[in-house]
Length: 102
Image 1: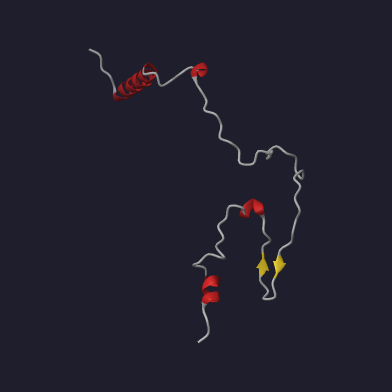
Image 2: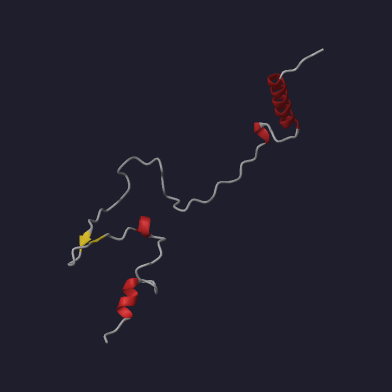
C-alpha cells in the first residue's frame, strides 16, 4: 500500500497545475509574439540620451513683487498644459475684483 504525505500531494498537484498551463496555449514561442506599435511621442525632437547641458535653456530668476512675494517665471515645460486657475471664474482674485464698495 502506498502512503502519500500531504507534502508529496501538494508537490504533485502543483506540478500537475504547472504542466496543464502549458497545454492550454497561453505560453507561446518568441517568434509568434507580435508587439503592438509604440505610441506617438509628444515631443518628437526629445532625446533622453542627450548629454548633460546640451539643451538650449535660458534661465530666468524668480521675481519679487512689491508686496514681497516671489513670483515664479512662466516655464512652458511644466506649465504648458496647466489650466489657468488664477483667472478662473471661481478664483479668489476674480471674486475680489468683482466685489464693489458699499
